[in-house]
Image (cartoon, rainbow, N blue to C red):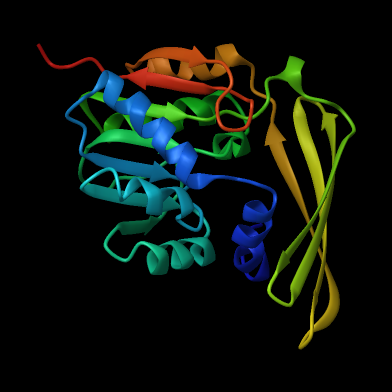
Length: 240
C-alpha cells in the first residue's frame, strides 16, 4: 500500500483530483495559532510524500514528519530536506521531543483498526505535544455519513503521461473496503494497470473524542474540513 509506483503517482493523482495542500495547510495553521499563538514547531503524522509538510514548513520554523511507508518517507525527505522525516507507526513512536502542533491529515488515522489503536495513537500524539499545544486530526467518514457502494472516477494528465483512477467502496463490518484501479499510459511504458485495496475503519465520532480525552486533550469537532469529513482540534492543557 502506497509503496513503489503507487508512491510515485500519489501526488500526480491527488493534485489532478483538485487537492489543494497549500490552502489546507494555511487553514490548519490558522486553527493552531488561534489556540496557541506562539506555536512555531509542528509534527505531521502520516506525512506521506510531504505535500502538507512542505507547506507547513513555510509557516512554522521547525517541522518534522512521521510516515509508515519508507517509499513515501523518501519522497518527503527529498521534498522537505530540512525536516526530520522518521519512518514509524503512529501507534507507537518516540521522537525524543515535543511540538507545539501535531497534525494527522487526509484521514490517515482511519487506517487504525479499533478503539485500542486509536487510544494508542492519541497517546503518542499527546506524548509529543507541548503543554498548551494543539493536535489537529482529519478523520475518515463516520458510519452514518459513509456512502455504501460509492464510485469515483478521475483522469489526470501530466505532460505526456495520463492516469485514470477508478474506485469502488463498500462497507463490511464497520470497515470501508475500497478497491482502487489505475490505468497508466505514457510514451515509454505504454499502457499498464495497477490495483490496490484499502481497509479504512468507520470509527464513530465518539471513538475519536474518547481517544483524545483519554490522552489528556480537550477536544472539539469542527464540521467541514478539507474533504468534508471535518476536523478534530484538540488542545493539551498548559502546565499551571
